[in-house]
Image (cartoon, rainbow, N blue to C red; front, side):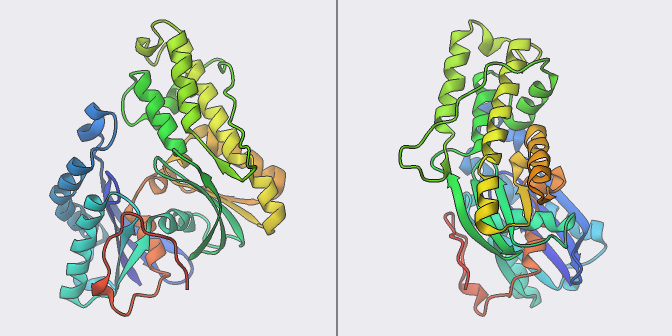
Length: 341
């Protein structure tokens, strides 16, 4: 089966051609257009600008992936596209285009939940992953821990109550005037640090429910920056900036890994998947390896190119899903829930 996967839920426009014959997906081609330069001056994604840029990029991205794979649209067996969640204007660009292509060519078509795509990014390196698995899906918009019984079903175990972990990195970089996107910059600064700064204290919840929160962590970073005169303009080479970044990502990584042991015992999980844009973070990858080794879990972390939003993960998930009976009635959904029959 040849699957064309399309992803444009936020500010990355990506297309990929994947061959899946039952033993796991094989990437034949992938193209991706970033909008970092467009949104950089604003310190974050501007939804209207993102949607308009996708319309300009979409045709070239799809044509590039098909050309790299050496196939035509008529040779594609299935089209998979992100249905949601995400920015609705961004989602609609590839969603509408994929529906039109599928209708014109008579190709089976399937909408994919964005988080299911992030889970299936791990299929490229671990197609035989033992289930059940704990799946930590963490990005600039999501911080969720799921139980996956297989590659197509996710059961929520824990999530953030407010902001996502990736947003803490982005806002820290913004407060320090380091640039955009913030995650890679914070990681680079942290790896350059000779030592970590004072640790941050994770919040405690009175109701005792399993969850995360990163709003207070951002406030703590802001207060620490304000307490150090000139720190906000010191730059990435300043040891104080590097120490703060290292302390921040050590705190975030340790906190993300904290519930894994208890949920392994509760669910009988055999594996741990860490995916999403924040899975590119070097400290989180290191902490995940240590945690998996300590708990006897098989670890699956996608390559960085499969962690950020990409068409390959959507194609990988779409290859396993049944096309809907009435695909033309479906629409993009900015708040698409995870619903399994």
